[in-house]
Amino acid sequence: MNERHDWSLMNDFLGGYFHQDWDLDAKTWHDVVDHYLKDAHAEAAQALANEIRSYLGWRPVETKSEPFLAQFSCDYLPSAGGLSDHDWLEQVAAQLARGATP
Image (cartoon, rainbow, N blue to C red):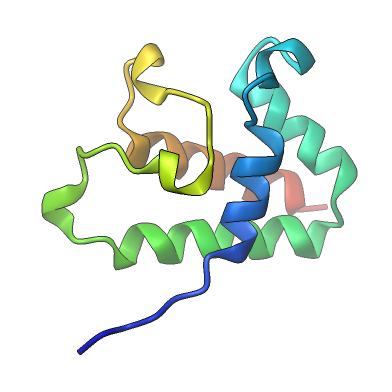
């Protein structure tokens, strides 16, 4: 079965906020997520967190350690901080969900 998914929220967020010069705008990736949270409505942040979690659940378990962020035009390298792409996105989703909660 050939499933098609729309990961447009992730694509917009990762490509738009973690662009090639993201580190000129923020000191850490946490700061980038905080910047997004200041720009976005709580509902949008929660929807993005949910989409990230759906994407991570959709990816086969055996690919958990493989890098995949480049397909979203993301120029952040979680491996520089000792994380896999999967584990980093889990942390991003958690920060987004916390920030979306009033």
